[in-house]
Amino acid sequence: MTTYAIQHQTRYRYSASVSESVMEARMKPRNDTGQTCHTFQLAVSPRAQVHRYSDHMGNEIHWFNIPNRQGQLVMRANSLVEVLPWDPGQLIPDDAAWAALDRLGKDPAYWDWLAPSHFAVQSENLHRFAQSEGIQRKRDPLRVLYAINQSIYDAFEYVPASTDVDSPIDVALTTRRGVCQDYTHIFIALARSLGIPCRYVSGYLFHEDDRQDRSAQDATHAWAEAFLPEHGWIGFDPTNNLVAQGRHIRVAIGRDYADVPPTKGVYRGDADSDLDVGVQVTLAERPAPEEELIPTTGWVPPEDTLSDQQQQQQQQQQQQQ
Image (cartoon, rainbow, N blue to C red):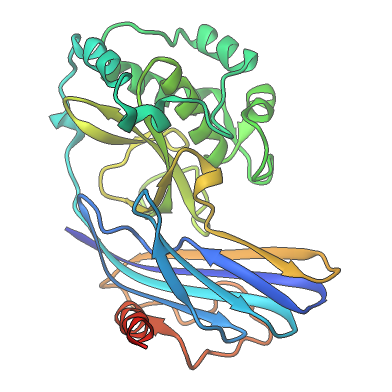
């Protein structure tokens, strides 16, 4: 098992003071197969009472309301997560797996992972890319998924800020530029077009010193998970041409990015907002950095920062009242 310490800091700065904001955050790593989140703390400034709930996909969401006037909003999340590495060499190709996948298409449990979604859609540009790369039902599904991963990695240039969070996949398919979100949506759309259930994963990637990962070290990450009946869910990272096998830390799963943005909210006021994000993932035995991930003008450490246990106790007390 490998243990990671994660710091995730997000700041919204407003061009003018706003009177109220409501925010939800998906920052807590999942407790799931091969992964355990031992501790999680979320601090908010200005101070706010933080609540939490789990959605139908098992993602944990923290939300809060700040009714006071504010010029900026800062969230700081700290996690300690243990991840179990595994060997992709254990995966065995199976030429008969296509028939098993076709049977899954009749099971409602997989319909969300097979149907087009907000960002992972079928388009003429996607079909042309699939044809140019020879992506079709051949050999066995496992080898096809590896081929899709490799094709996207080779065909696209990783360029930060080349797309927006709401850009359709046709933007990246046309320019052959994008970021991890675009790579993942294209992978998902291609896999689903072949009848392979596929879903979006948001989280973090630990960058080792001796690896040449293309994705940014100071940001959240995204990759895909494809389901094969004989193996279960397998993570594929087309941004870095990797199989998720120990360095990927899962936070939330959904049909695509629209289901699992790290933060999502609204505010009341006539103002524009700027977003700054800082992420650092380190091995737990390494000392945590003392410097700020991003400058936090006016940051006030909240007195009501809640750990998981404190939040649970608070909710139980409220239910008993």
